Figure 1 (cartoon, rainbow, N blue to C red):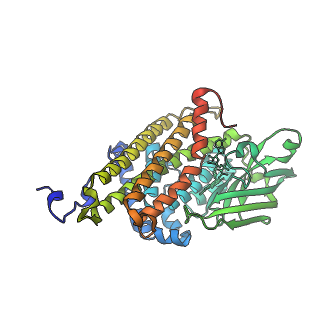
Figure 2: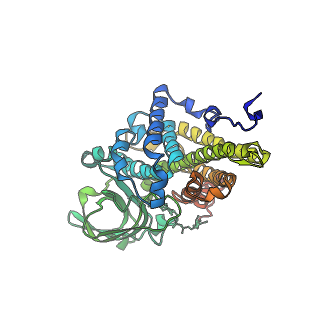
Figure 3: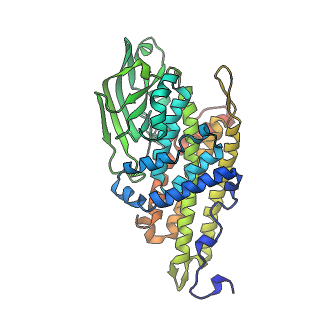
Length: 413
Ligand SMILES: Cc1cc2nc3c(=O)[nH]c(=O)nc-3n(C[C@H](O)[C@H](O)[C@H](O)COP(=O)(O)OP(=O)(O)OC[C@H]3O[C@@H](n4cnc5c(N)ncnc54)[C@H](O)[C@@H]3O)c2cc1C
């Protein structure tokens, strides 16, 4: 007799196939598989038991940072790991807690990565070691109160060169880690160039505690409550020329960074679906209605299969993008070639986040009323998906980037 025919018995989810149904994890090297297992164990012990509490209280667990830094996972491709490994790490983090994954990505994939890509040797010597090991934290401050999707053309924060300093004025919104970070990468227009009719973008490493920097937390969020998003104003903030990224002069450079972090957000959409499947299947096996587990109802099984199909399709797309990324290289002149294009990355982000929204909605439905209470993990997964859908280019903007690429005409403006 199979277990599901024994009255009252349900299979143990641990013995059933995992949500990585096509075993993409097996594409990793043995060493990477071991490291990923270490990450899973860390997350199970140090994050999973507390994540709901942090989220409910909207508190960031600063005490986690030394242990998280101890994993030595900052910007894995600079440490010899594959792009697939880097993506699966973010998916696994998200699978356990979307907020911790988002903290990690903002800090490593935007702040630390920008130091690698655009920092001078002197800036790298000054900031990289502490930031890579999470002894200091970073943020990425691009979005403004009046400019989100159109920030590339609409940037209003300005910087004016005065001797060997710059004077920064303006405001930023939504800045992840912004309330507590030690440093933030701030994007501004060069005021003198603007007066000459040119829009030249500058990027600065700004100490969050400098005079003139005012930061306040965005309250009452319904997603990523553990992440501390900030409104930040800059009033005549003085920054040394030595804290400007000399290599950044246009939005193309910004886009290069965003392309990498957008990929990681698409991996978050994968992790979100793995989490939704894990939780919904477990619940369907345990919850009895009409005298039998939900898992025995055909409509519930259909939803679980649709969720799994969405997750596997998203993982397949991301695994291929990771392969494309392996071909990226920088030539002797410092120019970048190969890798996934912005349109390919945009399709990955829009497609995976659309599938994610379907998947978490089915998961929430399977949990019935309990699906809207954070005592059950699904409510948090469902709510956090909304942030993934919007940040790093909203679903619509990423779709329009692909639309422009495949038609040759832009519908964005
Ligand atoms: C939780 C969270 C964390 C974030 N973290 C950071 C961070 O660390 N650093 C940072 O710089 N930014 C951050 N952001 C900002 C994020 O990148 C923006 O929210 C995003 O770019 C969208 O901008 P917006 O919210 O102003 O929406 P808007 O640009 O005002 O868009 C509103 C709606 O209109 C749609 N829309 C806009 N233009 C078009 C168009 N041309 N055609 C069709 N539809 C359109 C959008 O898709 C969206 O649905 C974060 C945002 C969130 C929610």
